Length: 109
Image (cartoon, rainbow, N blue to C red):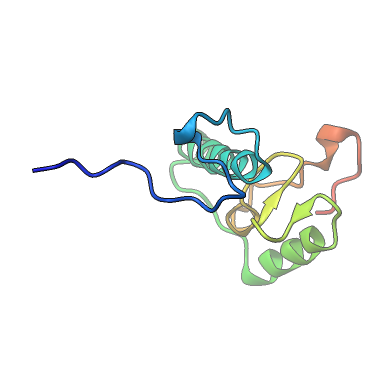
């Protein structure tokens, strides 16, 4: 039985990391940043609070509205360009904070 390749075909304008790319294309950087943000949030929640508390729907909606109005919000990937976190997930946790302070700006929420 012949083994199938472990890579799916990629469009010509997007290099695959499996094809020798060093992830220099913007889409791969963005995907790596998004994955890293997700991993960081999972670890943070597991490490700090075994029973994580969630913000209310109203708080979540307000936070997302603030994020969408921010120039650092990447709507196509639903991530913050400052910290790489998945905003749809981050706004759900009551302990979460806007991380614009990392770059010396006032937090939006």
